[in-house]
Image (cartoon, rainbow, N blue to C red):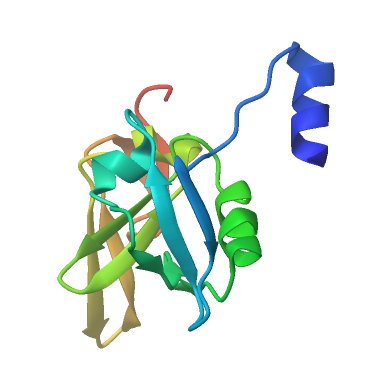
Length: 137
């Protein structure tokens, strides 16, 4: 709620993430979907009446309150991408800088860690973990 008030005071409008379902706490845990509204992220994701939501981006959902607070913590445009069984969270602000990038885990003589190959980089540090953007996002 504080985020909405802050946005309204600063810009006169507020954006927030939403799912687009009417749901209630399931007796067995999670949030059971009652209605899926047309034209919403829930409909696009294929949620249906009767589905039980037990996790969002790896975070356990035990009740409708958990679901609401988890969705409220998101920003419009945030994405979770799954590749080869691994989930990556990309915030909306970083997405343009990272579009088309490759993330690789390397284990070598100089150490182990993640390495980013980014076609949007004007310069890199050489270690593959940081870069300067070639264009503004």
